[in-house]
Length: 331
Length: 210
Image (cartoon, rainbow over all chains, first blue to last red; front, side, top):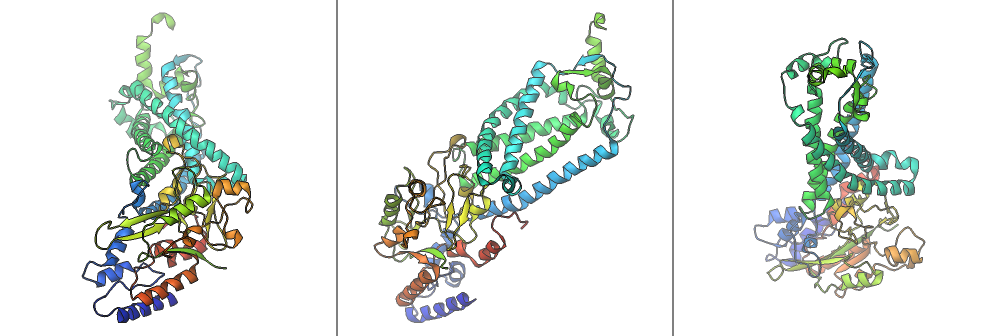
């Protein structure tokens, strides 16, 4: 308050001392004061250059990179507020909310069992290539998600437990793992795209699957599906599209300033983080239904074989198709 | 306790880069890094003006707020310092800093930036005062010797002022009064703005929904 009064006093004094010819640029310390005085003056005066500084205009700089000629980049403040504010808060609530929702689903619906019980007969669901593709993507994603979430939340959740030194070491290792795992993820993404894109196109079973709620809500309901049902297709295209965006923004951040300036990197970082959180939310559901949420599902990506009963209940059209192509002797 | 601040008087700076050189020599900062820089606006045109800028040691320091490993700390007299042993070189402080202060020893592809380096207000780092480790990582600790930052001490035209914020603004006010004009304390509202101090009191860095 006293500072404001002083500023006004100085402005008045400054006007008096400078005489009628010099109006405007008399400003006090403690405030940039540029905006008001620039507005008061109809001439191009010094305050305009101060405003330009605040707006990130670059000056000449000798012997150092030209980008360092920017005196103030106010965008950093926006980046900080979004990252520490909306982004972190929303991501936190959504992660907690979806985890709770899945837990509630488990309590209410329970594990989805094979209704006929395991038949004992197995059928090959994913060949070796497909399993490699799945785990390249999934394994790297787990590393990326954990190390990424650590950068966003670790300081507030993990650091108080581990102490600064250990937490810093883990985060340092995590950063390198994140940077390396990114390339594995991209490789996995390309691989599963070529392996599974065709099987994930819309087919005649999808509408029925959507109308039947995927059989998720009621016991005994099993809308037929081909190799992938509509839920899996949604998951697949989410992984491909969001994964591609997260990968491209991630590459941008890995090679600073090769694809854009600091402002581009700030935006890339926010997109990268927000989309990565979206992906984690989807994958939480995927991991649940593939493991504790459903009997007989997980072996599809471990041994590659699933029980025939499981396959008939969840992918009836696919089983029929496979059985048609099987030599009779095998049965 | 005093609140340390920098102020560069745009009416006095003659772009001699003495501050940049003084800093670099005093602290023997890594190759390619200049903790301070001088920028000339309207170069060669009417209204040409030069300003020396480095870390402003903000009240509610953005670097401190966004650091994922919480390696920053603020001394009792408002100087923002960091612990290079904790720094993971992620670059977040650089995204957030309005003044472009944080710099990294390597170019940074594949995230290999190295430990962040920035102006310490000649106050060293978390290592013991005047220790070899402190000198090697952060440079000299003049504050511990009761001296002010060398950049300002060596400024030939006394354009760059460093020290107790109240004293610095008093000197600047006197100048403005004597000259009858002044061009404002560049970056002060950004670094030490009123609302920022409010936020700093609430606790820097806590995620808040704004």
